[in-house]
Length: 70
Image 1 (tube, rainbow, N blue to C red):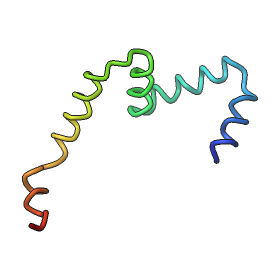
Image 2: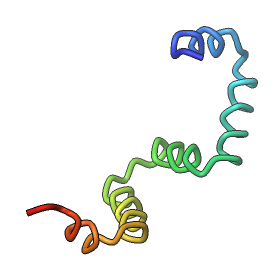
Image 3: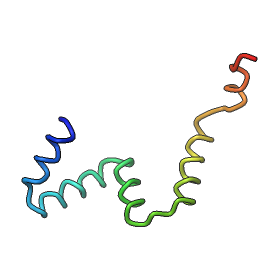
């Protein structure tokens, strides 16, 4: 579905239907939950630290540095 198609679909919905869609996404998707929490309370430092910890826990930077040709 394109962005325009989604916009048209969402514009046809009642407010309570939109609320249910957002709540359902909040409950089922960690990404949606994080995004909505950030929209409600935009704390850049906290978000930076959250994303930094994900990166630190998933990537070994020494290994990456060793793979870079000199």
